[in-house]
Amino acid sequence: NEFKGLEALGANSVGIVFPFYTLSGTSNVFESRLACGAHSAYNTPPPNLIGMITQLANLAHLQVFYRPYLDQVNLQKQHPPVWKGNIHPSKPTVWFSNYLAALIPYLQIAQANFVAHFAISSELNSMAKMTQWTNLITDARKYYSGNLVFTDSWTSTQQSTVWNHTSRGLDAYAGLPNARVNATPSQLLAGWNNLLKTTDP
Image 1 (cartoon, rainbow, N blue to C red):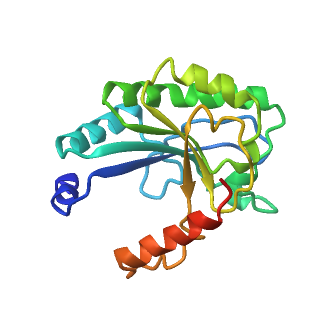
Image 2: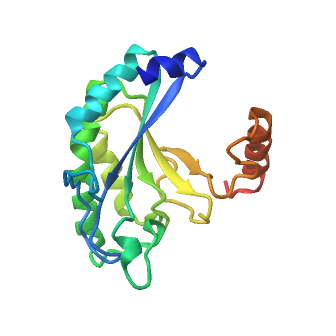
């Protein structure tokens, strides 16, 4: 399978990314949604499928990182378009409750399949300072004992309230110097070193 191919290339880890959805930039909804069909815009894979993929990665001796994220398929159709890093739920406590409920089945699958890392947030910059994260992370640890990662985007200047309780990740694909399709490993490494020198700690 493809994971064996990655192992043969010398890879030691793989990220499994899967989408969730909301209704608008102010909605309190955070949900999985699967609409079958070749042209469907909504395609959250069910937890058991993620588990099967994870088992294949484990067989290839790859460390696994789960990356649930808020998809923008419908947010970008609004006027003006909304970026997931700029949502403002009208009732944050309700949003966090829905967020945890959506993630719990995937946290359980991660625990059952020895997943090394789980992104508890991915580029949700506008939500980063909210105090509800502390309770959410405490609740998430009831289902998953691995490494929780709070991932910012390259545009983030937020100082999250939860960095002392999680690892910190950085999505830098748009801000990473030398990030071209044909970039060499040394060029990518130089880009990362330069970026990390200038990004807020």
